[in-house]
Amino acid sequence: MSSNSAENLRHDWQLDEVKALLEQPFNDLIFQAQAIHRAHFDPNEVQVSSLLSIKTGSCSEDCGYCPQSARHDSDLTPEALMPIEEVLKSAKQAKDQGASRFCMGAAWRSPKDKDIERVVEMVQGVKAMGMETCVTLGMLTEKQTKALKEGGLDYYNHNLDTSEDYYSEVITTRTYQDRLDTLERVRDADINVCCGGIVGMGESADDRANLLIGLANLPKHPESVPINMLVQVEGTPLANTESLDPFTFIRMIAVARILMPKSRVRLSAGRTDMSDEMQAFCFFAGANSIFYGDKLLTTANPMSNHDLALFDRLGVRSAGSSYAQ
Ligand code: SAM
Ligand code: DTB
Ligand code: SF4
Image 1 (cartoon, rainbow, N blue to C red):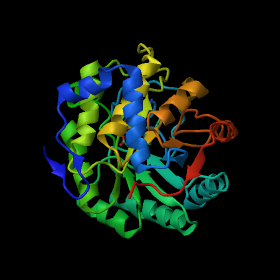
Image 2: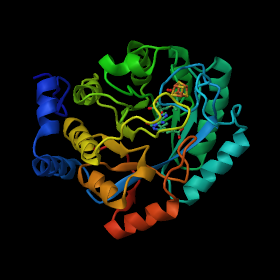
Image 3: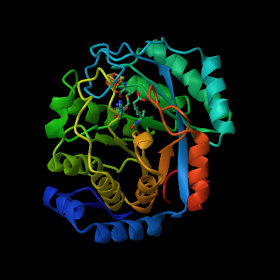
């Protein structure tokens, strides 16, 4: 078994093992995931991140799920890179509402070096407010990752999105290997990695297992693992995809927790279509992070007061720290 001996975390998961975990009786799976969760985290703490789209739409890429692609006919108004003052105003609001991390997303295939200079200023401004920072800007060069690290960036979000096999059904304008290359550069620059995927895109059960394997078998587990349920947006190729059984989604969360015991598993996009009970089940299965605030990047998220009420009903507290020690 190959493992990181200091932490005893595995990076050699095989398809048959992960499928067996995913397919075992639900109660056995949830019990196992909750036991692992409790060994590493306070089970009543959930970390909250707020999202802001700092550059919206007109993206050259063809990601089948994404309303921001210029190739799809979604009802979206493109917006250029936001002025720093507006970004900081939004970050301040997020902080006042209780977010501990501020994530800024840009609809780029890859940023220009000039864009990075402006994003670094945003990162510095948000950090000065006492919040953790995360950005998701597409593919990066080594020079750009270094500039972001020197600017004080805490996390970089770059998702695998799906299995390597299903990838080309969803995106043709850049490869799975391109993503691995960017993730490696981010890791080498010593920036925390936020990397997950999307389910409900018409993928098979093997693809879902292979997405989890792709994440867990990275050289180091991502510190943050967002599991998104596809938000179906009119005009995108994946609109009208058959919806996933909610239990399949909960099983994905549970197995992410089992494979990556020390990572923050984030119950990410798609919460507006989930009942409170389903979200509570996701927390029980090991999710301990959410996107918080009325908007994701371009689509709706549950209202903050609804989330606060849910936390209150569940006795859940908002957590400050990010990674299990
Ligand atoms: N353009 C950059 C990139 O693709 O890396 C950064 C922004 S992109 C919107 C960030 C991630 O949002 C995608 O990798 C995808 O996982 C997620 N995402 C986008 N649209 C989504 C949707 N409709 N439903 C669920 N997740 C979505
Ligand atoms: C991630 O895994 N999910 C977030 C974040 N990383 C950037 C994005 C979700 C986007 C959902 C569709 C939208 O609002 O545009
Ligand atoms: Fe562009 Fe990112 Fe959307 Fe793909 S996911 S179309 S790269 S904004």
